[in-house]
Image (cartoon, rainbow, N blue to C red; front, side, top):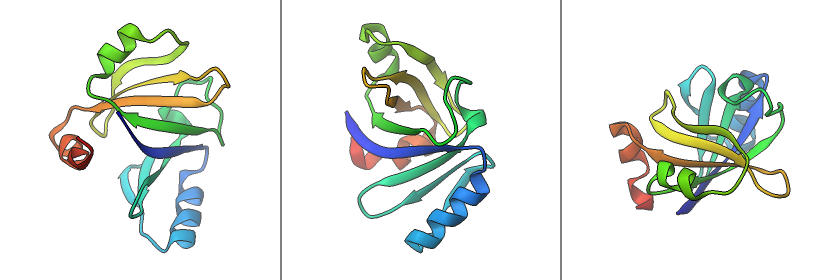
Length: 124
C-alpha cells in the first residue's frame, strides 16, 4: 500500500486547475474534462469535479489516496462506511471510497487499465 496523492474535489475544475498550475509552475495533465493531475517530484495533486464522486461528497473536500494491490480484497475485509464500492473509473483505476473515523475521505485503488498500470509501476 502506498500513499500516492491528495485529490481536491471542486465544482469548478478549470478554476482550481489554473490556480494550482500558477502556484506550482507545472502544467496539469488533464485526463478527462472532470479530472486532472499535477505531479511534483514526490507526490500528485489530483483535481476532480464533484460529478466524479457520490453526492454525499461536497465540493472543497479532500481525499487521501492509497494505491493497493487488490481493491476488491480490501473491500471484503474493510469494516467502514463505503461511499462508493469498487468501481472502474474512466482513467483506468478500480477505486472505492470510504470515510475514516474522523470523516476524512479515503480512496483505495488498483490500476487496471494498461496506461494506469504503467503510470503506477514505480510504486509496486
